[in-house]
Image 1: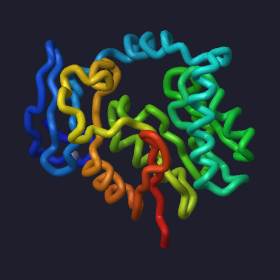
Image 2: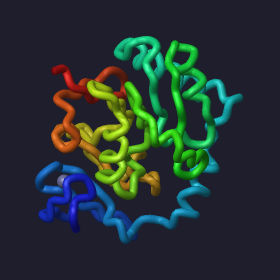
Image 3: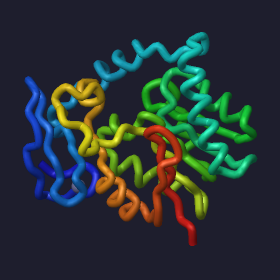
Length: 213
Ligand SMILES: [Zn+2]
């Protein structure tokens, strides 16, 4: 099995859970589901359609506002951003707008507006996206190219840490649409692959990658 992040060929069986297997890359430590075991595009879309992320869900609004608050503490007001993998709703774009950012949204399933992928941004947000990507290397390469010089990549995902003792029953693992799990080591490799000098945790499961130079 080849690592979908760094393409290293040395990977080892990490866990087997019912009809799914998980491999781990020897180089970047990414834990991933072999691409042949992924569910269909249609099945995946149906899963996302059932997400209760609507504009009248106050918990969801609070969740997004907390992310926007953290972003606003690290990114200059007035910056332009892209919410890549926004899902069904365009709520994050609206909330970030209230924080003084000018944000566009893209979602492969619900808002496949390719024209937003022709512009450049000060920051790109991947909120609960990176663990779903069928080809993380390709997508990260593409969106890194959409960042202005010294632009920031902001990623929200749960890291696989030593505290996760029971991977099989980890709620994050059990979501069938989560097909890779990053560790700190995977994040270091990600930074290296896509030319970010540093990454910093700026909130719960929220990380910013950027260049200081
Ligand atoms: Zn790897």
